[in-house]
Image (cartoon, rainbow, N blue to C red; front, side):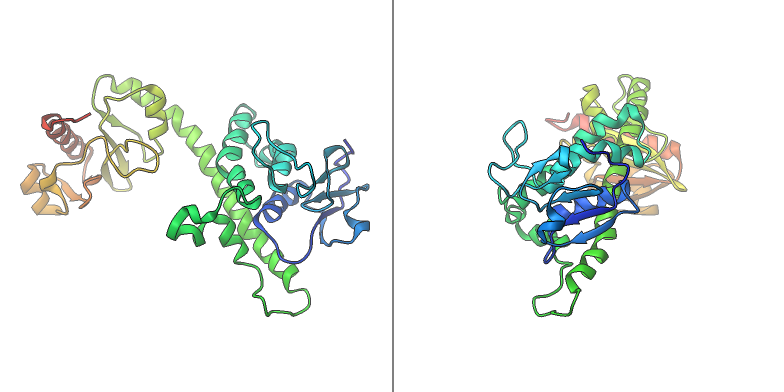
Length: 315
């Protein structure tokens, strides 16, 4: 492959932009911060050459020449046959270097690269190639990331010179924020898993998991096979939270709900119903409650466990 240490230009197509080349630009501008983005279809620019990375244009996929297009035949595919867009190609070849540039620990590199590929890059690729219709999201379709990023393009009758290039430049930091925030949350989730796994060991047979702070916990509970756990207790600013555990990702169904008589109550009214001094709040949905102290939170959790165990079909 041509040396990457002297990249001076990042070349993609001009006109309206899509999520794939915009997100590709996030990766490439991080790695080559001094390179200029050139948006053009001029053959002299889109042909392979020294100092250039060409993406989403060029009619070839040739990593040795640093050309990463997917519009030609045959189009590049993943090993499982799913299509790649420019974003998938750039992530394949530059993703690990990008993660290193964000100071991701080497021990987490492969796992984070694969996780981001699976949950972020692949959906972008599928939509860009017409394999997935954003309409599958129903009423949320206009709020999917590809649609939101494309909404940043100039409106059809904005014919001012350079409007598309200015919009692309304005959209780039927005796209960058989504990529970096997603990766930061994934990295944090991996850090949390170690803490939660130890807390599960410490909890033993208890149905209550106590954590040192609020953090992602469901994946670690699943990985540990801790099916007996029903509630999580953790400090939260100046008070303590008692929360349920969702039965699966994306579901609002809990392994066990907090007691029905607590729903929507606060302060003295909640204290009177549950009998715990320091009880402060229970959500109407019965998936979270708040107490003033750890002792009150643990007592509320114990009462919630006892109620759940009396309920037929409780976990």
